[in-house]
Length: 570
Image (tube, rainbow, N blue to C red; front, side):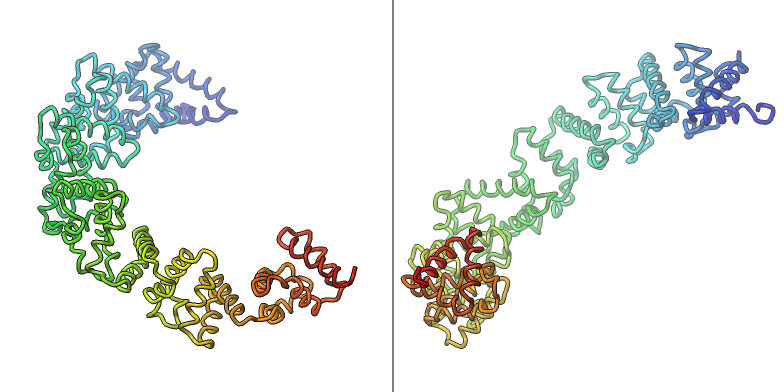
C-alpha cells in the first residue's frame, strides 16, 4: 500500500477502516505496523510527515490526525498530551490552537483529544503565571471587537479564568474586557446580545452582574449609570431600550426606587411631558410583552406620586384630560390608570367614586349608557367593569326594565334585538326580575311595537345564532300572551311532522312548558288530547314506553301513560 500511497494517505485509509465494524481489527493491525515503521522519529517529525502542519483550522477534521495521536501516545506514554500540545502550539500558536480546540471539542471522533489538549493549555498557562488579561491577549480575544462572544476561544478563556480564580473569575474577566472595551455602554450591549444565545447566555449574565458590582464598588450614582448606558440619548424610546433593565437592577441595588426616578426622566421628553401623555404611553407599554413588567411598575409609581400629592379622583381625571372624551371614554388606554388610582383611594367603594366623578360629564342615564355601550366594542375587562357599574347603579335606583330599554335600546328601534347592546338590557332584566324575566322583556317590547313588527323581530331573533334562545323564549311569551292553544303551538313548532321521533325533539320541552304555563291544572289532559289526534293508541303506547326509558322524557311519558290508561277507563 505504501508503495503506491504516501503515509498521510495510508493513515486516512486506516482511519476509515477502523470505523467499519468488520474491518476495524485488521485496520488496527495495519496501523500498528505503520506506527512501528515511523520509529524512532519524533512527534514533530511525524506531524510534518502526515502534512498536519498545513491543516489550519480544519486540523481536527483530518482523519490522519488519529494516527498521529496514536503514535505520540505510543512513544510518549503519560506525557503524550503535553508533547502533542507542544507540537501544536509551535505549529499554530496559542490563539489559533485555542480556537481549534474549542471548536473541535464537539467532534465525535477526536473531541476527547481536543478537551485533553485544552486542559494542557490551561495547565501550562497556570504554571507560567498567565493572568486573565495576558491569556485574553494570548488568545487574541482583544482583537475580536463586538464579535467577542462569537469566538470559540472565548469559552477556553472563561474556563481558564475560572480555574485561575474561582471566587473572583467574573471580576477578573470584566477587568480584562474593559481594557479592550473601555465604554460601559458597548459592554452592556454586548452582554445583552450574548444572552440571546444559549451557548453564551450564562457567562453574559454573570458579566452583567459583575458590571453592576463594578459600578457599586466605584459608587456610581443612578444618574451617572443612566448616562453611562446612554439612556438619556433616547428618552422617547426609553421603555423599549433593552439596557433599561440593567439600570433598574443597579438602582434597586442602591436601595432607591428606579421607577420614581424614571418618571422624572420621562417627563423630559416632549412626547411624555404631561401626565396624560405619560400615562397613555405607560398603559400602551403594559400591553407589550417586552415592556409590560416595567410599565406596570411605572404605573404603580405614578399612582403613589399622585397619592403623595393628595390628588383627588376628580383631579386626576382632569390631569389625564379625560373630561372631554364623551362617548369614547372607554377607548382611552389611560382610563385604566385612573380607575386603578380610584381603587387605591377608596378600595371599599371605588364604583361610587367613579360614578360621582363621571356625573358632571354624563348627567343623564342615556349619556352614561351611550358612553359605556360604545366602549363595549373594546371587549376588555374595563368595558365589563363599567357595564357592571351602571347596572348596579340602575338597580340601586330601582330603574324598571322599561327605563333601561330606553337608555340602551331606544335608538335601535325595530333593530333592538339585533343591537350589540341587547345583552346589557337582557342582563339587567334578569337581575330585576329573577322569576319571569322573559315575560317582562316581552311586555316591554309589546308596548313599543305593533303585532306585525313584533312577530317579525322575534322570528328574526330566533333565526340568528346569537339570539336564537332569546328569540324562542320571547316567542313563547307571545304565544302565552295570545293564549295560543296546545294544538296550535304543537303545529307552530312543527312537532306535527316528526312522527315517531317526537320524544327526541328538543322543541318538545318548549311545547310542554307552554301548555303547563297556559293552564297548569289541565295541562296533561290537553297535551294527551293533542297527542291522540296525531297517533293511534298502539303508536302512542309504544312511544311512551320507549320515552319512559330516557331520563329527559321519563316524567312526562309516565304522566301521559297514566292519563292514557284513565281515558280508556282502565
